[in-house]
Length: 91
Image: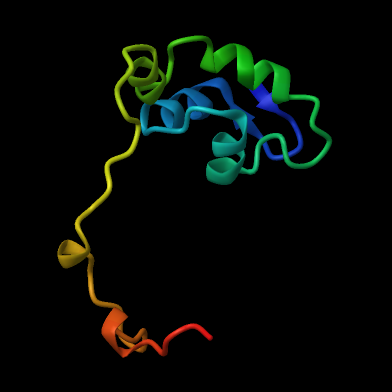
């Protein structure tokens, strides 16, 4: 069944995006464009996501952090971006 008629997004597609980690209508929109045109499907997307459909929400409910900071030494080096020690000091 279609959830978003504007972009032809089905319930199954929304559920697959949710299983892949999209926990909010905004994240579903980023993954599929559903909800970004007329907006009439946003409430249906919210109901499909439901309460507790997001693994990160379960962590919050348990008092656990939802994100972990990566030590700077483990961050990937990006070509063209200077290393921290190469950046000029702020005035």
